[in-house]
Amino acid sequence: MNYWRAVWMIFAKDFREEVRRKENLAASFFFAFLALVLFYFSVDPTRVDLGQSGAGLLWLVILFAGNLFMGNTFRKETETGTLQALLLAPVDRSAIYLGKFLVNLAFLLMLEALILVFAFILLAMPVGEHLGWLAVVWFLVSIGYSAVGTLLSSLVAQIRGGHVLFPLLAFPVLIPLLIAASSLTQDVMIGQSAGSVRWLQLVGLFDTIFLVAPLFLFEYAIEE
Amino acid sequence: MDFRKWRILLWAIAAALNAAGLYMVFFFVPAEMTMGEVQKIFYYHVPSAISAYVLFALAFAFSLLFLWKEEPLWDSLAHACAEVGWVFITVVLVTGPIWGRAAWGKWWVWEPRLTTALVLWLMYTAYFLLRLFSGHDARTARVAAVMAIVAFFDVPIVHFAIKWWGSIVHPPKVSLEPAMRLTFLVTSAAVLSLAAALTLTRASLGFDEARSLAEEAQ
Amino acid sequence: MSAMLFALAQMGAGHSPSTGGYLRGGYSAILVILALYGLYLWNRHTIITRRNKRGR
Image (tube, rainbow over all chains, first blue to last red; front, top):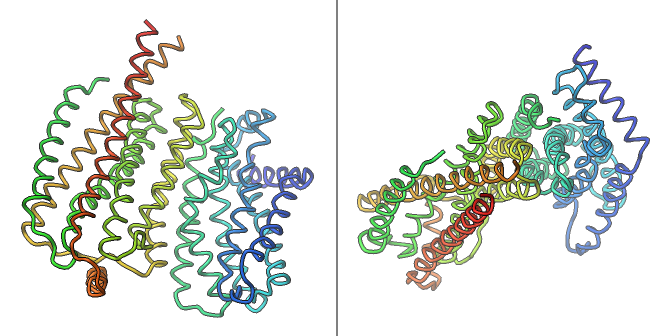
C-alpha cells in the first residue's frame, strides 16, 4: 500500500469514527464555551480590556479544551485491543502517527474556529479585522500542538489510567508554543507586527522538530 | 554490573572537592562589592545549573541508546541522570529565589534563566510522574525514554521563547576577580563530581532493583 | 550588568546590605535538598536489600 494512501485512510477512518461517536468532541467543544464564559466572569470587564490582553486567555482555553480529545487519541484502540491490529498493518508506523496527527489537527482547527466565533460575539475581541493573519498563526501553532499531543498521547495510552497524565506531560512541553501563540495573537489583534517574525520562526522550529522527531520516535513509542 | 570501586573513588573525590569548595566560599573568597555576602550563593547555584543541564543531556543520550539497543543498563543510567539532574535543578530553583530576595528584594523574579530552569523542572517532574504511574517493565522504560527525548528537544525552544518573552536579564557575561574565578572552578568541579557520584550510586541502585525484581518474577 | 545595577538601586533604597543570613540560608537549603535525596536513596536501598533477602 502506498504510504500517503495509508495516511489518508487512517485519517479518514478515524475522523469519521470520532465524529460519529461525538463524545470526545462534544465534551471538548462544550468545555471551550464554558471556559470562555468562566473566564469572563473571573475578570472585571470594566477594568480589563480583553482586546488588549485577552489573547493568552483564548490560548489557555484552546490548550485545556484540546487536551480533552487529544489525550484520548489512542485510548479507543488500547481499550478495545485493536491497537495490535493497527500495528500489524503492513504500513510504516509513522503513517499511523501522521494519520492520527491529521485527525487531531482537523479537530483542533474546528475547536479554534468555534472559539474565534465565541470570542468575537461574547467577548467583543477584535478578531475580525485581521482574520487572514490570525488563521495563518493559529494554523501554524495548531500543527505544533497536534504533533506533540499525538506523540504524547501514544505514550499515555500504554499506561493504565494514563490519560490523567496527558495534560501533565503535554503542557510543560507546550509552554514555549503557548508563549509564542499568545504573543502572536495579541500582536495580530492590536495590529502590531514588530517582533512577530521571530515568534513565527520559533513556532516554525517547534513544528519542524516535533513533526520530524515522531516519525522516528513513534515506532518505539508504541509497541505491542 | 558493579561500579563499587568507581563509586568509592568518585565519592572520595567529591567529598574532598566539596570540603575545599565550601572552605573557599566561606573563608577565602572576598564578598562581591554591590551584592555583599549573598553573591557567594553563585558558587553553588551556577555549577548546579551546569550539572543539571549536563545530566539532562546525558539522560537524552542514554534514552536514545536504550531505544536503539534495548539494554536495561541504558534505561537505568537514563533514569539516574534524569533524577539527579532534577535534584540539581531543584537546587537552582531554591537558591535562585534566596539570592533574588537579597539582591532584588523579591523572592521570585520572572528572569529568563530562572524561568527556563522552572520549565525544565516541570518537564522532568512530568517524566517522573510517567514513571510513577507505570510499573517497572520494558514498556515503561520505552515510554519514559521517548518522554526524555521530547523534553530534551524542547530545551532550546524553551530557552529562546523565554528569553524573548522576559525582559529582566542576568548579566550576560560576568567578569570574575582571580580569587573568585579560582573558587568558581573548584566549586564547579566539586558540584560536578558530586553529581557524578550521586548518579553512579543511583544507577547501581537501579540495576540492583531491576535484578531483584527479575529474580522475584522467576 | 542590569541585575547588578538593579541590586544597587535596591540597596540605595534602604535595603540592608548585610546579606550573610541569606547566604547561610541558601547553603542550608542545598544541604537539606541533598540530605532528603540521600534519605530517599537510602530508603530505596533498604527496600531492595530486604526484598533480596526475602527472595533467597
